[in-house]
Length: 213
Image (cartoon, rainbow, N blue to C red; front, side, top):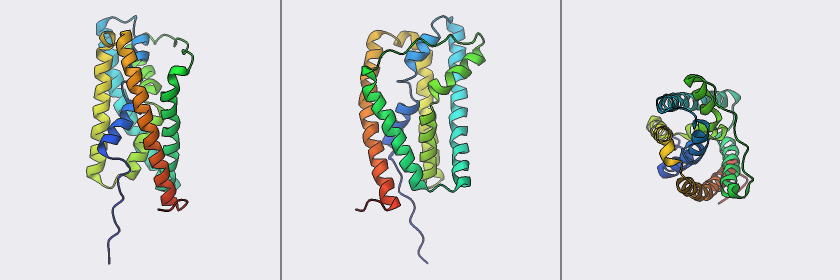
C-alpha cells in the first residue's frame, strides 16, 4: 500500500520569518510602545517590556494552538483555512502599503499605572495582533510534522525576542529617521506580504479545485 505524500509546506522559512515580522514584529510595535511609555522611568520601562514579551509569547502560542484545536473540532478543511488566511494577509499587506496616505491616528489613552496591567494592555493588540494569531494558526495547521512545527515556533520566538530588543531600546530608536526607515521597510514588506497572500490564495483555490494547473 502506497503511503500518502506529506503536505507541501505553505511557505519557506524565509517567507515565514517575513510574515511573522509583518504581523507580529517590531515595525508596528516601536511607534506605539514609545508613545505609550514616554512617561515611564527606565526601570519601569524595562519591567513593562519584559512582561510584555513574556505575555506575548504565551498569548500567541496559546492562541495558535486553541485555534488549531477549534479548526479540528469544526472540521474546517486546510485549503479553506489557507484561503481565509490569504485574504486576511492580503488586506493587512495592502494596509501597510497604503498606510502613508492615511490620516494620523489619534493619541492612545495612557497606560494603566501598574507594570503588569500596562504589559497586558500592550500585549494585545499592539504586539499580538488578530492577524498575527491567524498567521500562526494557518502555518501550524499546514505543518507536516514535529520538525516543521518546532521550526515555526523557533521563528516565532525569535521575532518576539526582536520585539523585546526594540522595546528595551525604544527611546534610542524612536527618532524620526529611524521611524521613517522602519515605515519604508514596512511598506516594502507589505508588498512582499501581498505577493505571499496572493500565492496562498492561488494555492488554496487549486487545492479546492476551482483553479487548475
